[in-house]
Image 1: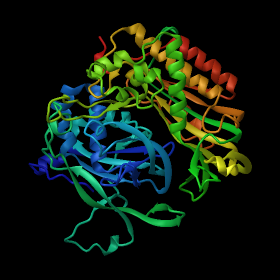
Image 2: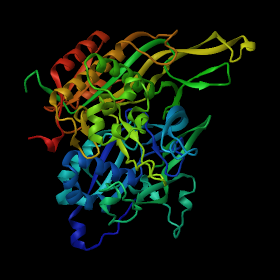
Image 3: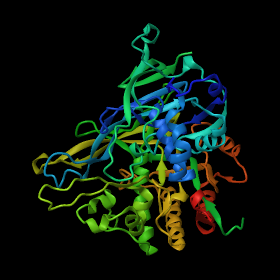
Image 4: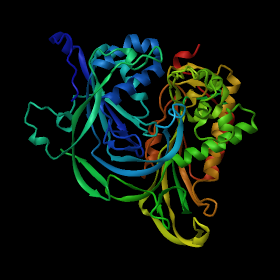
Length: 248
Length: 310
């Protein structure tokens, strides 16, 4: 689970919060790039990471409510809410060779920021079963969050289409959700599981300008990288592709 | 709601298309004498034939340019000459990339298919100024098309090609030709026509211009189903022997549902989402699909962003 440390973790605050679960269907292949992997030779995750979920939330909330309302009313919840992600029951990852537009590097400064066509590789995922995203929010935020969750249409790449199937109250099934690798605890039970780097917001009070800069020159470190273990084992590997199955 | 004004906020097309002898999307060459079919591993362990959504998107952009030119809808200098970099190809002309509003008003294809102008710092000698980053995501998205497992077949043909050098002469090339029923999903966000979709502000305020662009997008979408184009179609135009599926239209804020046509009951699944704001239009033949698209082209308009409405 991706847990935020709440500022006032009193019993009263806990009682006013609920877990909201949303099931998403992937109607075709999708690709959520592993952070740090080369964009022109990209590896994929079995499901989006927590930063992707929060960013999709921000993007969709802006569509529904506008920039100002999202910043004032929703962003404090988005950046601090607890998130748990339960990947689909089975995910197959295959490499695809593609023609890509690449940003030119090297050469003269004039060419440095131009696009050119070239060949790249992208890992594409295909899933069986639904992915579930759990968020923990204050009760009074439920109506707005439900609308946002129902309107999220893709994760990561815009061709990673997704469709919201159902939203309901439910606590995460923790043993089927992705976990951060905790160096202090015994991680032997995670030894055979699929792991990856994921991105998460740097802190629960990260600034709005880190994601929606008011000027083009604002640059704030907003994300941090963490090691994550997915509750998935490699079932089969063939010609560079692999099939992951969620461990029960 | 009158039949003349069906607002499309979001639209999806989930379809199964049966093709014989196609080579629309390939994974490149294996050496200089063999073309490889594109394959995708499915989560049930089967390997199936596939074609990339990129080829469909590229074809739609080409058709959209043709329709825009015939309808006198503005295009930028890059899209006019079919430059796939879109307005980024004009990065050396600061007046052509002055702002997102300027770009969206100037070019319907950049507005529809998205673009990226990368940021650049000012040069040390100040001979070139700073360039701000401008971008828009595509309004129309294509999934990979996946063949129904165990229902696709491949035949390898030997063809002749001319070698790279004059001395090489003719070479043999093995080209796969595939047949099967392919499942694909397409999403079109009508609400985003003429809109800066990062800040969700309307950039193209002329309503007739937004409608014209929307109609051109749907015309191109219909055309690409009726006449497929992609790799190798110069000598291997596919035989289309079947088309079934459903078009789903969301008329207010929200998403038109998508469901994989790999599942046998995908149309029933989509129909279960029907409501006052979500209409599902199934089709069983190419003729029915064309008639349906004709109706949407004549009777629909792009919706306005939710909180921008009066």
